[in-house]
Image (cartoon, rainbow, N blue to C red):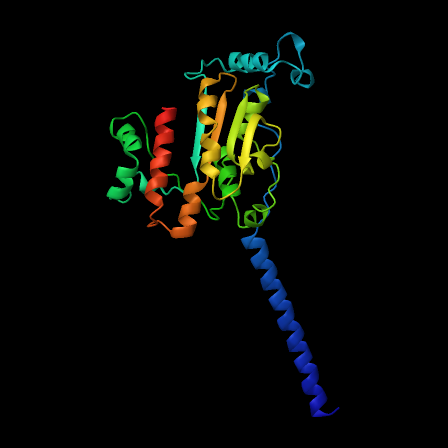
Amino acid sequence: MSPSSITCSRFAIIAAAALLLQSLGLSLFIFGFFPTKPALSGVSGLESFRAPWPNGVGNDSAAALPPEELKRLYQELSEISPPFDRLILMVVDGLPAEFVLRRDDKPPRDAFVEAMPYTQSLLANGFAVGYHAKVAPPTVTMPCLKAMVSGVIGGFLDVAFDFNTQALQDDNIIGQFFRTGRKMVMHGDDTWLKLFPGSFIRHDGVKDTVQVDQNVSQHLDEELCRDDWDLLILHYLGLDHVGHIGGRDSFLMGPKLKEMDEVIEMIH
């Protein structure tokens, strides 16, 4: 056997071993950086182990009950009277906490304080409570919404799913409201409609980058005068677009913060 053939054999073995190690390292990276999170079955609450249905009404027939009766049954089960009859969840996409609250003992910049005078007055007079919510990366819309309503921490694989959002299977507050007969309305980012299909009695999902906030606020006067909903979701995208286009120092940031402050004042 010639020396050159031995060298070729060794080279082939080394190349094969290197390829195997590279494949193993890539597999470890993929499974570690993009872990899969199986959805947990079942939902939380007393109804999970004690049926709330009187007179032998089963869970199968519960779905046929009118929403008001279904809501009353769950309120009787909880034995807690709700202090409020309606809830508004207003999401200002891309709003950093330090625009409104103190951070590291540093107050917000004067320009941001002046842009949101009503919100600052609510905080200063004790009519509102402010706190920092620490978010885990990736900070794109879909995994952050999932974290807000379910407590599930998103993964980097959710970045890919953000472009093809599927219905949320994990137990979450929107699903709990729907199961207990609450009526919900959503105006804003259409990601909500993809995560919770069929959950809203009215909705206006928007995704354009120009008239996004006007498309949400145009419904506000009418919705605040109506009494046929229990939860109203308003998801504003404009400030996030301003941040992506011009950054935090954009000349559009002040007017957009002022617009959000006026919405908060109208709701309050």
